[in-house]
Amino acid sequence: MGIFGALTTAISGLRAQSFALQHISDNIANNQTVGFKRTETSFVDLVSGESVPQQHQGGVVIANSRATNTDQGDIIASDVATHVAINGDGYFIVEKPTGINDGNPVFQGTDQYSRRGDFSINADGFLVNGAGYFLKALPVDPTTGNVSGTLPEIIQITRDFLPAQSTTNIDYRANLAEVPETVNYDPLLPNSELISVAGFTSIPTNGFLQTGIIDLSGVTDLTSLAGIANGDQFSLTAGAVGPTTITIDTADTATDIANEINTAFGGGEIVASVTPAGFLKIETTNGSPLQLADVTGSPVNDLGLSTGAVTGTVIGSEVSSFLDSTVAGGAITSFDATGAPVNIQFRWAKVDSTLNGGVDTWNLFYLENSNAAGSDVAWRNVGVDYQFGTNGTLTNPATPGIVTIPSLTVDGVALSNVTLDHGTTGLTQFADATGVVQVTDIDQNGYASGELTGVSISSAGRIVGVYSNGEALDVGEIGIATFNADEFLKKLDGGAFEATQESGAALLGLQGRLVAQSLEGSNADIADEFSKLIITQQAYTAATRIVTTGDEMLQEAVNMVR
Image (cartoon, rainbow, N blue to C red):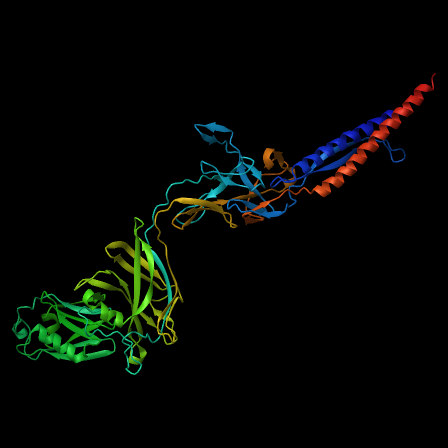
């Protein structure tokens, strides 16, 4: 290798340093570009084929680009709710439209990838970053909240009103004081904490009844009925109460039998009445099944009594007595199918206790008609006997503590069936000196219609639409792409990348961690770039000295022939 070879090597060095200078310039220029990945210069020497260990023949130098796609940039906080950064491995899946057709962007379905997360909502509802790339995400089912697709797609958020959703579930958790201090409660009077059915026209508590199917309103002597004789007897039992025997005498009417039953039980666990239609009605007030048995003759059958369950109610004229016998259980605003608000108020009544020889039992009521008067139903029992063990935990209804209120209606607004979810341990009966119901959680799943007011991206990768009714609806989940060989991705305009054969295909799956309301800065450092600039400038200058020296040596060689 001679002087010409040395000049050739020096010139390749000038070209290589010029190439490095381009990278440095690009890195410095993009120091503030979101998600920018600097490019390093890698120098590779080429040796002449005639070179041997004892006599090395200098070749040339080639400058190659080296990507730094895996080098993390600084995470910078942002005030924009749709800005998001990736801390770690991975890329947003994006696509740039190829054109516009009828005012709508046209896409070819080709994925590109970017670390630039400065997304914002454009006029058409697309999430677009600062370089014009549209975000792709996995669609989410708005009903279940689960991802409904397997391939990311361009997400468009419409500004349609969010339809109202009727309340179908109420999460209700509370502790019922073991001794409820109602207005009627007197610590010196046993069982005064319990609701007493005496004085109520309609029985408020749950129970079981025998309802007559024979009109007895015109019968002045029950023994005149077929099959019934003077002295016939039947017994009544309600759980641990009874059996108690009732005797039918000559000239007894249905009212006489009802009075005899009420006298025998003192208006307590079993009560009887004659309905306005003239039917004999016998029912329990302690939630236990009512059992009637013939003692003499067959009066149960001959009176035409049939068994059924009864759900308690409180009529308008007896609301004051009801309030004095119960404790407040909280309230919640729910919604019907059109989004109209419905205020559901709850109250609790303790109907039995272990001190009374029974089981700690409560009934839950809701206000059905706030304007009820006279015989109109005001409060309605949900129809379940809540029972607790000696340790204060719920034993009925059994785990998981689900109760359905059928056809729940409040002030004429129907909500259909509503489920009360108490959870496995959400309803308890522990001692409480305040004597009230401590509601620890009450929530429901209904809402009114709402207008889109904003969009945000969570750290879980969910694209969330925020509505004027306070609801937040997931509309998409950001899919993160990774590659086996990130450094071989092809750079595109705007901080985007394209997969190559060397990089391998994109792999879906979050590797890094998303950081909401943040941006990833450029990984180019000005101080570092300036240091490389000094070195590159010195190397370029040294290469020019080689060229100058080679020129002088050639000039001397030419002068030898003069």
